[in-house]
Length: 242
Image (tube, rainbow, N blue to C red; front, side, top):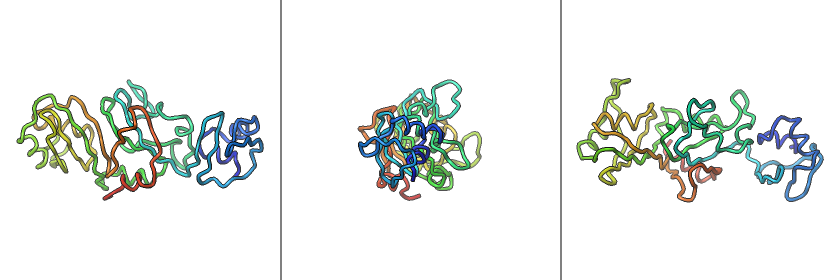
């Protein structure tokens, strides 16, 4: 693949912009300066720099983000900054056929909810991980205003009725961690589901953190506001039991 096409595919701007980056001597491949935008390289696994920024070619992007509080999972946020501002420009600008450019969040977390968020530009992966029909398990660490009791845990496991659906929604698992902390596993993705389920059993959520999707846990060494690419093993863990 021509170098200018590699840069374009990775989101470094329009084709003319990518051509200019190479011609201006702003791109190195394997540590060597390349000024011919038409020079061809095997793209898979290619490492290069653009204006000093190291990059590795990925045909499709698969990311995890440790979402901090105070960010919206929207391209057009209304009151809080967007999570997409936490990503470098190339990931926001990757060309996607027939869709919006850049990686997309798979599902959403409220602005005050923290934790694991997956993003991708692979439509099949987004559907597999985000479709309600796939019942991907998501684990939440829930801090409550009032002390949790056995009755509340039992009701969450048996199912509670929310105001927009007569069918009860159930937690796939519910563990009392401390007097004011629950570990709740859900396989559905209803709007504000955790908060509404706790309200239905007479309690209130004061803090909410998603710690796991599928068998993929948020790494301890990934600070809030930071992201990294998923490994093949992590992608498999996220999709476990889908």
